[in-house]
Amino acid sequence: MSRRALHQQVRRGFTIIEAIATIVVLAVLGSITSLLILNAVDGYSDTATSAQLHAEASIALDRAVRELRRIELDSGASGIAPNIDTVTATSITWSDSAANSFSLSLSGSDVMLAVDGGAAAILLADATAFSVATYDESNTALAASLTGVACDPIRRIAIDVTLRQGEVIESLRTKVFIRSTMSGGGS
Image 1 (cartoon, helix red, strand yellow):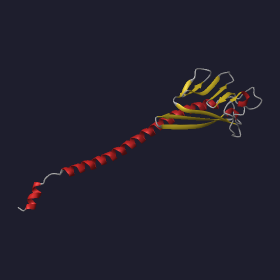
Image 2 (tube, rainbow, N blue to C red):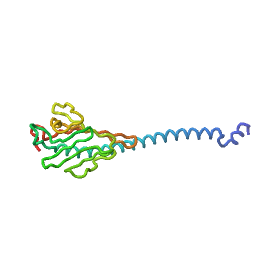
Image 3 (spheres, rainbow, N blue to C red):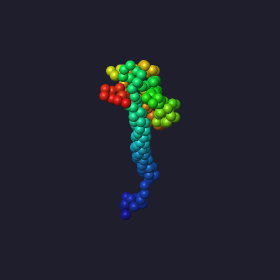
Image 4 (tube, helix red, strand yellow):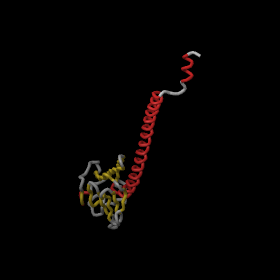
């Protein structure tokens, strides 16, 4: 047998260098794969959290819109005017013909709704921002704080709410036209 043939028969395994190189290549591939999987899981988690926050905010704003659309006309006003008592940057209060009072406001991090003068119920928890803006019939923004007859020109109310959970932030905005002040609208 030739020397070369004898050498090839004896060599049956891998050298330590070949084994280490294989381990390094597999480790790099494993790291890249795990990063891709981790990014996909994080993306899914953020999307699910965003969808949950959006759904919570949508439900809360739908309820607020229903209540705000029901604002009646102020029977004591000289013209068409909603029966809104006060507006601030984070709250609005109004009354109905039966002398019930209503309010929508931010209290700490909770958006609260008090209906018929009862205890305020939490519409939305963990709000990082909540704002109320009002507009007249020409769509001009009114002052941030209004009281009494200064509320008479209000025709539209805009509400913005922002929620945050971890690194996910979800913001929603809605505009409400007060039905009783619209032509053809009634109480």
